[in-house]
Length: 289
Image (tube, rainbow, N blue to C red):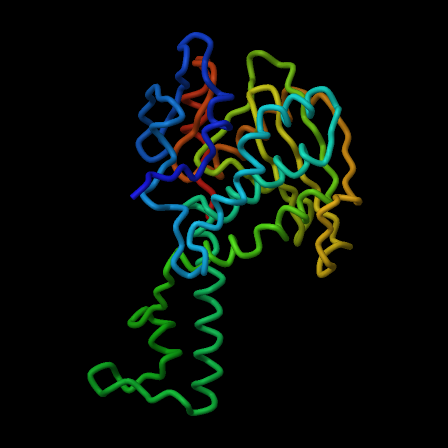
C-alpha cells in the first residue's frame, strides 16, 4: 500500500532551510527531541488517503489535483496581492485537506460522534428499548455504563475522515467565500512555523473562531468565516471572497506561532534553527482540540 502524505509535500518544502539544502528542522512535542528531515520522510501514513466508507475510496486524491500543482504559484500570488480563483481554490483546498485527513483532524471529530452515541443511547434508554446490563455489571442501563466508563463508544477514525472527504467541496467553498487576512511576515528572527496539523483556531468570541494557516515562513492567512453564509448553497465561484494584506507586529507573530505549536499533533517544523525555538515549543502546552 502507498504511504500517503497527510500534509502536502509542496507545503513542507516551503520550510526547507537554506542552511541545510533540502532539509528542515523539526521538534517532537512528545519528547522535545529535535532533528532534521525532508518533506518525504514525515507526515505520511500507509493508505491514509484510502477510505472504505466511500464509493471511490481514493476520492481525496482527485481533489488534490487542483491543490498541490497550484500551491507554489498560489502563495506567490498571495505575496503579490494578485489573487485569482485558482489561488483561492488551491489554498482553500489545502486547508480543507488538512482539516479532514490529518490524524489530528480525525481524532478531533471523533469526540462529537461519541457525544452523539451517548445522546442516542440516553434516548433509547428512556424509551425502554435497550435492556439493562446483567447482574455482574450491576443491572445498570447503557447510559449508566457509558457514564462510569464500563462501556464506551468506539468510533473508527476513518468514519469522520469519510464525512470530511464527502464534504470537501463544501469546505473549500466555505473557506473561499470568507474574508482572508494575508499576513506578510517581515521579521527575520520570528518566521512562521508549520506542523503536522497546520491549521490553528484563534478565538473571536465565545462561539466563533478564525482559522490561522501558515503557508511559508514569511506568509500565513487568517480565514475569518462569514456566519451569514452558514447553511447556504456553496458558491464555487468565490463571489463573497475578500482580503486584506498586512504586516503583523512581532507580538502577533509570536502569538500565531504559539497557536501553531499548540495545535500540532506532535511535530513542529521550522526553517531556521534559532536559539529561542526549543524553549518556545517546550513551554506551549498542547490543545485539547
